[in-house]
Image (tube, rainbow, N blue to C red):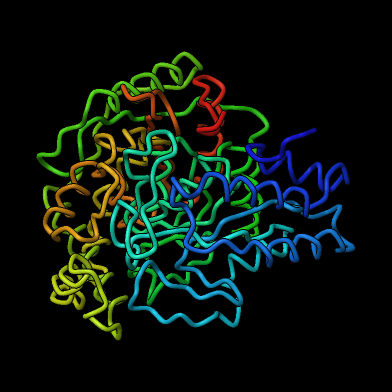
Length: 446
């Protein structure tokens, strides 16, 4: 008997289109795996078991089944995006438990492509932090359950890494796709601004937040990104030598980078150099003020999203984060700081096609009730392990996390790839090359 849990989305969709398996069989097998494993992983806030099976049958009955790119593929959706008939709690007890009348546009596109939404994944409250925990549970890294899966798309990353679903839809406002992908050994891409429809919260964190896929293979990532963007991200007919800058220094002053992450960058750089690319050390000219700029935008985005919610029902770390951000909201809305950062970094990307950095500075924090801990403790923990992601939300440029190497615990390590606007296909090509040169295991289960 063929097992479909743990298989790629491309494999599943091809089998469904060719009628070697039905969508119901695929979805039922993934639901059974969720029931068996998610109690210790904490990936899902809500599993849509009955609804998913009904929707799987509807996919099977569609006249266009043979042309659906995601035919019968189970997907998980981050709990800050609307799914018709389900509440969108955004990780908070302060949000209304009211069913959404319509799908978010990205969810609608996935369903139109034949995907089946099996559940809504856990997030930290208002998707603020780089760890995922709150009133609906703690999302753990399936490779090392003592550690957080990361955040804020932590539940989605945990679900894909454990083989509970082959794909998850998340979003990234300060690293919220790349952080959990790096922790959980997945590949992800935060697209450049306006490549994929956003519509996240109240203003997309001033245009910094983007929706994107979490996957185990670059093929699946390319497939889902194409559906979300309603565009083609084609493989180049031939690979050309690229100019790749290798940077190991943290963008945030005073944050050290641990050896496994610098080793991962060196391994990736060596492999790409042997493959014929022009690889050299070159540090982007990050301004010393970058940490302050990031903090202002991070907190101001939360202030906007928390407006109108009952403060008494928010966790203390969220209340403080929003209160700090209210004093910055007006200045952040002008976009002046982001314009200055783009102007400073643009010349660097005229000299280099791709920037290669560590994805994280150190392994993720211990899994636990971070939502019950103080604001400053959360800020310090987040900043210490994830300094490399925020610059590319501030600029609005595409950035990826790609698994390379392992931590001493055996959990995955990762690197980050960054490109100028419009280079999503180029970054996917480099990630595909890395997957060939430095292969990684697809899921924690195998």
